[in-house]
Image 1 (tube, one colour):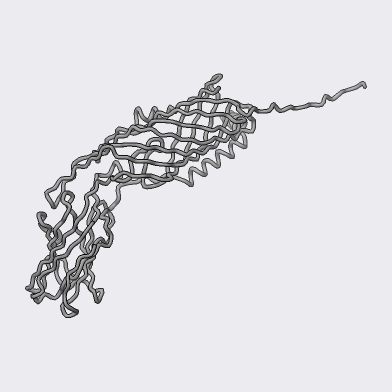
Image 2 (cartoon, rainbow over the protein chains, first blue to last red):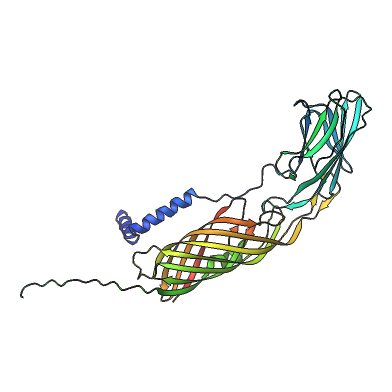
Length: 191
Length: 206
């Protein structure tokens, strides 16, 4: 048996010249170094828009409790305190989402309305991942609450930071606020 | 002069003609994949031999896929042409040999049109449904290939061989849903710009 294997080995060595061996070795090394990467479904496959709150003076968190309701959708975010960011779902059928930002502090409650215009785009990641819908935010508008209340926070303005809403949990919309003592309230629209 | 005479051995190398032959081939692996796999291609190619060292090649084919994933229920359908042009370089020392092993380069292009559809997506908050389907999505891709191959004579003018190909995407024009699942001639497409492929060919060498 050993003799047979030796003979086979010498025969194969004879057939496979040194040159060919060299080339096959290079090919094998090349194939080993350069390998394909196959995509899988992303670990975070939830499409959410991230809303952030920025104090115009400091970096403090929103000093009140926040609930968010969507017109026709019900509660989207419940009882958030000391918030800096809020993940919110977007509708996959409508082109404008109307979001009620319900702020409460002690016994005071106010409602600001945020309008988000967006597109709904079919997204394909891989065949073994479920289909998804991505969005592009085209315009945001903020309708703040009446200024004659004693509520401690006033939402100033809103701007689009990253229009694309996809699997990445990054800031999409930024809302600026201030405390009433800071300055007079203004409402603005940024595109 | 008597005694032993040594003849002077003269080895004359036959000059290799510039046009040293041509051949056509068909990819059997692609046909097999198209028949039983998720995708495949029907591909023919033609090559010209230049001094049995350089082999300019043209490859034409139709890539096809009609696949539904069991888990996601997504369905992908494409049936579009592609082409590649390039050159093989024979590594044989003996250029008279009918067998050869070679390296090669290719440039590939495909302009394709595909359908993608899946189950309707239901909105968990708003009462909307999103119909997940798009038909007639246009895509284009340019890519390059670096290959290694072996070809051997089976009988007279009939040869067979195989190639292993390292493919690198140069540019892709994506449709609305993003990158296509399968690109004719390139293979399975992904977020990575590189992949491997191969062929098993039957060659009629003249």
